[in-house]
Amino acid sequence: MTEASDEALVRRARGGDAEAYGLLVERYQGRMLAYARHMGFAPADAEDLVQEGFVRGFRNLGRCGDPSRFDGWLFRIVSNLLRSAVRRRGRRPVVHDQEVLGRIPSSLPGPEERAEGEWTRERVREALDGLPADQREALVLLYLEGRSVSEISEWTGASPSAVKMRLKRGRDALRVALAPCFEEEVE
Amino acid sequence: MSHPVPVLALLLASALPAAAARQAPPEARVDAAVWTAVEPVLSAARRDSLPIDALRSKVFEGAAKGVAPERIRVVVQEMADDFRSVRNALRGAGARAAGDAAAGAPVPAPAPAPGEVVAAAMAVRQGIPLDAVLRLWRARPDGVAGSLEVPLVVLTEIVRRGVDVPQAEALMGTVVANRVPAHVAAQLPGRLDGALAAGTPPGQALDAAVRALNLPRPPGRNPGRRPIR
Amino acid sequence: MSPARKGDTRREEARLRALLESVRAPEWAPPGFAARVMARVRREGRPAWRRALDWLLRPRAVRVTPAGALLAGAAAALVLWAAPWSGGPAQPGEGPAQAGAGTAQVVTRFVFVAPQAGSVHLTGDFVAWDQQGVPLDDARGNGVWMVDLPLDPGVYQYAFVVDGLEWSPDPLAVSQVDDGFGRQNSVVIVTQGA
Image (cartoon, rainbow over all chains, first blue to last red):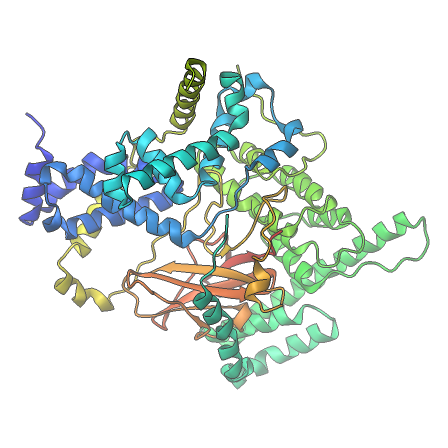
């Protein structure tokens, strides 16, 4: 038995078939939750926001112009919710600027230890947490969600050149914040 | 990077307490029956110089929540008892510490600030051993009044999140002794939550939080987790 | 660009990709998540005119203010301008002093999500537990209620009052404590940043 296509499920759900929408939820819940985690949300917060995204998706299914591209449409809804939540939670303290890194060399593990592993992952998470939300969003969509610049532009409402600028600034900031993680690879 | 604050929000926010202040005094919201029940407790607390604002606040809270007068009295009495015993213990510990430092010379013991007494009582009530609280009190550098309120709350919070008491106490002792600013120490529970949410065990999560905040490490602790190979 | 520089750029790009890849979250949902979503879809996922009838139903708080993987766990009352000890750069001209008109107060943000509430008030020991303490504003009409309140540095207990009746702790607070009366209060630590 072949799986029902997104398009078929959307059409059934539009007709009031909640079960069909339930299949779409099961199909995309993991991806949406992972995306929220990539944007820095703790598991419980990610669940609440993604849940809200699915509920809004169902309410507004009539506005999903191309049911065969339900995933992108849903992504956009969740993206918007995450962005609003980021705005509301306010700024977070930025830990890793160059000045800080310069002052804590004695506490850094040796190169072999910082090459990989949890230490590095923590630095990456912190560096992402320190980015402005729009830069983080662009980097996450490009690198972790595999989206193109034009898709990011379409979803975020920013022009392609603005998206490229966010990507550039985000990359530059990460290179600075993660300098110790680049050393052994780049030097 | 800038931290823009909407001017309107600030204007609004600063207007709010002013609006609250124009309202009737808080005492007017509390039934006479409640005052009758709690007044003896409050009078005794006043005479004993306990943190009276915290006790009055509990009265207002109970009244706002519609709690029966007798229940409010019992809760306020328990709080006053907790305050008294912890305040006396802090005074005793402070006197010993001062006496040690001055080699027997009579030095007035540092008096705990009301916020410190409240935080210490809350810590003990939530399961932090009184001895740990007293050691933290002794670790306090001289002449920094009120400095222990936030560290005590943070100690309570990190223990509540599963860090064992000795590890939490050692860290907070270092935090206090090194005069780590309160706004940095206050970030520890949130940092810990982040690492715990990622599945890190509490002890390691605390180490990660310490590194992330670049806090001084307690003596004897390994300055950085070594990956297992 | 020289071939050597191009090579560096490519290596940097590959390294950056690998670093980001190292924090990729699994595409996984906790057991029961889809069922919870569908329960809400069945309850709330109705056209607007039908949902208007639900307006008076009991509000439901949803955690939104989140915590990053390493940062700020569940800080619901966000103490603004907090910066790490070792230091971000100084922020001249910014900070609590602006908010407090020369006082040492710190603007603290409280957020509560209650999509079906008609009003939300913040109360706590900073307003002597006045039920009408500080009204939150749902400026966008999306159920996210918020207020920025200048507070003196200290440790406070507080709660939200929804529709003038229902007491709720802040699900996003750094801590909840037993209030002695059978409910929970939330705790906020207000500190002055660097």
